[in-house]
Amino acid sequence: MARSGVGTIIGRKSVSKGREYARIWVYVPTKVSEDTAFPFEIGMPCIVEINEQKRRLVVKPISEKEAIELGWRKRIRRR
Image (cartoon, rainbow, N blue to C red; front, side):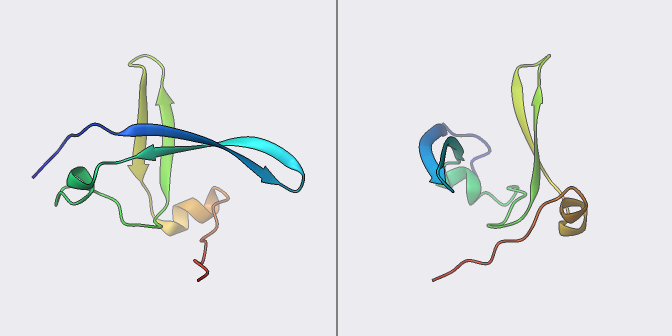
């Protein structure tokens, strides 16, 4: 079990409908994502918030119903 590991913030430029913007990903190490305590599955929605007092990025799992109420839409992977 690995409850912690070193991840990476990854940024790339993206173009959509003629507009350019930055996309940010957070890489979670495999040893952390394979831990039995890891609370996420690929494609599931989550809340991402900044805790300014602790200077932390907080990611919490939420239900699809909650996510839809907040404007999230499920993406279907194309092959």
